[in-house]
Image (cartoon, rainbow, N blue to C red; front, side, top):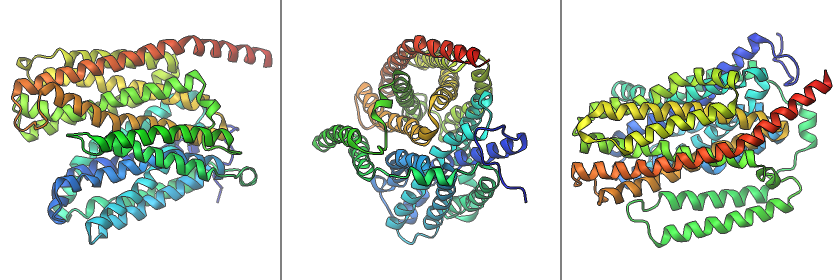
Length: 485
């Protein structure tokens, strides 16, 4: 049997490249499906385990927080030991976590299973983007990133409908068992199509930064819990956790400055392009999270829509993201990542401004149009920003850079869920949305999206400030190409 190709530097066989893209698409689909399919099952799981909401929400949080805390570390493991074996291990861990969830006899074991799932999902997410540069030709990087974004959005959109069918027919265990055949297929495709690492070279540079990994994990844990604990009434505990996170960040920077083989090269983070890309990713992720936090309350309370209509309208966002991903990737390949990134942000700004000014009398479809603009702009930005960051990453740092890129997005989502939710409640004048008047809910939405527009404008300023550096780099690369010619 002909072995999979082993080099990222030679010409990638078209058939192998296509098969690798199918594999990487599945590695993006499974983690997003793991989030959304669990959301639809929360009421069923609350009944099955007799758990209150403040406990049942940890079925989602345990998964997301594990991804946030571990994704940079698993990215670094990929750089050291090879991205292919780390991805294969991640798939196996994800399948093991899914099995534990499905057979869990108690709520605590279910949470442990979700955390194990999250660890596997972190490896899959970080390695899929890192492997794009090795699995496809460089002139198709944008299209590949667009495909990954499409599959991630498709997984988010598919989860509620697929989960509903599985629960109705086979019980809640089926939403976890369904990951096993999908995971096995992904595992077989990865084994067949992905480039094998240079084992000798990897073994020669293996020095894992254990102290840095522990400090970073503790820092991210403190920050994540500060953002997710006591949402309705943040207090002293949240402040103490944020202070601990700040001190942890300072400690982490010192540890990395002295490390022989640091988890993250602090000097690399001083590069304006990288810092700017991470900052923009976090800002726009916070804005996207606002649509998930505010949308259901506005549609159900302010517009008095039934639950079925709210669910249908809220699913518009993921479906638009799924449709935009591939065309966005092609635009990036044709017109360049920096111009398309800025265009995506401008489209998002139009959408957030539309919601900030939206009148209740215009109805539900007037809400959907700005939502489509926000989601489409975000899809274009994601494809552009991911292609720019991963295209500039050095081969020995692609795993950790991919992890940092995912981390910036996850921190934006976690922060957005907390801060945008608090802002919405402040604007509405109540933390109890069940008692808030329709007008108050609309006021909360207007304030939230006014601030969201400001966040997108900050991202636009960052994008414009990075433009001269990007142009200079392009000219430099062109001169190098002419010299070689």
